[in-house]
Image (tube, rainbow, N blue to C red):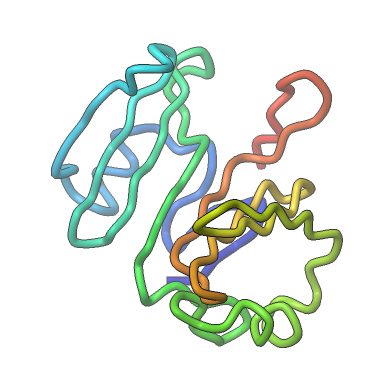
Length: 143
């Protein structure tokens, strides 16, 4: 499953509608609206270890992906459960300007330009989050 920063993951591209996603991935295992944001709805695919967020205010377009699927690759390298330093110095060395936040139990590596977040536990990438890039005050850069 190829990571395409700023564009999507595998067969998924930001801006897709739910019907198109279902054609590619099938029916989700769960559909829900998060408690903290009624302007979104989420498709959960258990087998793919993936959650897809659609933005109601953007005509139900796919705008955010979170996944812990071990088959995610970038530049031909598997990303999950790999040492973050190895990935930063190897497969992802072409991505610049990472902002690192350290928390009690995990770290996050954010590349704001591509809106890509690597969540790191025990110095290994545990999952990733990515969203459609944003410019200014919530101007989505649909590609």
